[in-house]
Length: 215
Ligand code: GAR
Image (cartoon, rainbow, N blue to C red; front, side, top):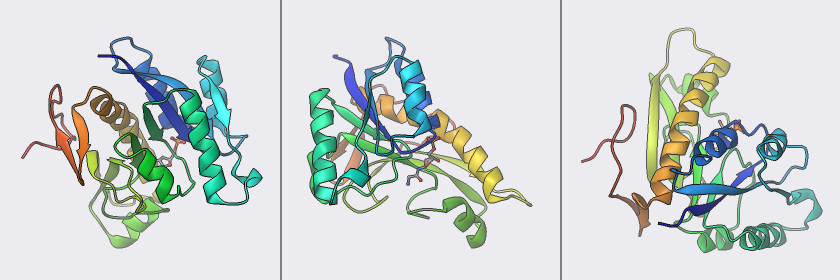
């Protein structure tokens, strides 16, 4: 099977982007990262991509008058790099429905909570405020509704007495770095596909500890 051409969209630090680039460096991985793109020119993750010898791009949202023209520019850059799969990795812009629909089944996101709990921002503090005993992260296909797409993989961690948002965030991030490459692999090799509003699992997918279990 042809290796999928992957673009990673970031807005900041880019630690998830770095783990995806590292995983996809292996020729065994069913995809290769061909572009790391940011809406913020100063995003740290761009430098990491350059160091790894990966093409980078900036579509600065402050240069566009509306979301439609920003998303058009984003789409054009993805097309120019013949991208098959888009990974949102700390990309903090809301995308238009039209853009999301163009990439339906080919765009995934990582979110720092066990969705459908705690969509949006400040997930770790909200988890603490809600008193949940289990927290974690989710990789899902992107649909127009924010953080609401069909779930590909999740990892859970316990919330412990005395936890702070910072401590939880660090422990969840460590799980994100394990989960996202595995989920991307499943999308690239076709073992997780979006069919209607559900994810269908097949092929080489093998459940692991904190991964979603089969029915
Ligand atoms: C990650 O924790 C990611 O889950 C989160 O932003 C962080 C980016 O870190 N994404 C969202 O909150 C999206 N709603 P990174 O830049 O180091 O990968």
